[in-house]
Length: 420
Image 1: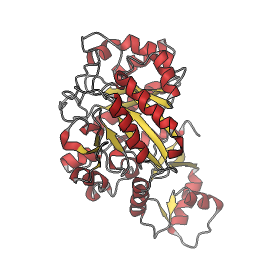
Image 2: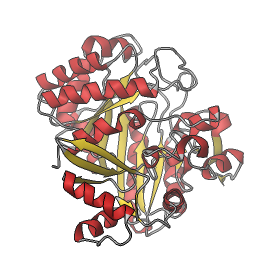
Image 3: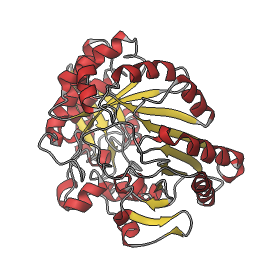
Image 4: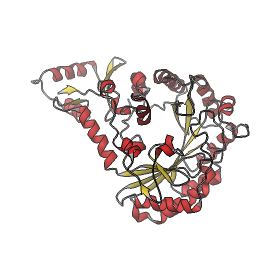
């Protein structure tokens, strides 16, 4: 037996915390138990106790013969090529009522889906899902609520053909400005069970970064809409972090959420602003810098008695772009593998009318090899990122490490506090 190459060992209050990044297993041992474990690993004749059997079952320890990296890749590929769920990300419009300076979709806001294209989109989806598969739709944009009619048309056709799939659920990525109570009720009836809304810092900072196209602020109305939407749909607040919107701005946002009695009602996660295409700037954090900002925010929440830090889970299936049967559909019915390519001719892999094209772009994504052997093979958080964003690696030739690489120890300590 051996300690799994993906098991992280940390001392917490004179006890030993063991966390496996493949299976998200987390175990707390006494110093004595950990000493016995080390003896067991190094001595084939040491008696195998119930504890050691449990640790083996949790993959904290594994057989010497197991090639863990090969097993990880095998499991990930099984999910990519034999999925129990297929996901279609649909942009019913590329129009947006906001003017966010970091948006990578600048210049692609000319189109809104017609009713005929919406019907054809639903038909395409139903042809490409099997009866044993779950169907997931992510409403995206642009601002998807500016294409609400297409959401209605597509959802209603899907719901009328329930024998074509196992079950149907949807999510929406919205700026929140048009997400009124009436709209939230409607979305719930169309199986939308999750809404992601972005708030960038407090009102002053948010309104300077995420204003309407006429320059007016959006923060106050979004907060009011979140309060009403929560009656029907769970909401997660996403905060984009860079050097101009750091942990101090996020803490001020938390004060605002608290004033609306929202801090304990919404989900909450931080995301680094990425330097995709139209937005390349020194204000973007490196992953290591972002990891520090992330921990400072989590600690501030802990001081308020709020622990949102979950046990880190493997990202197998994390990216729809590399999953064989998942597609992005734009307002004109063109197909893509990656969200970032939407609206760009270079990223097309067919359309809803003539079907999927197994072209070079399609092949690049569906035959994508997880992680860089040289950079990733010895990394204990490899299962949490599988080499990071595939598109970044395709464009740069190098895997971009995620923040877990630099803060996993603090992360699992905070996460374990919720369980132990």
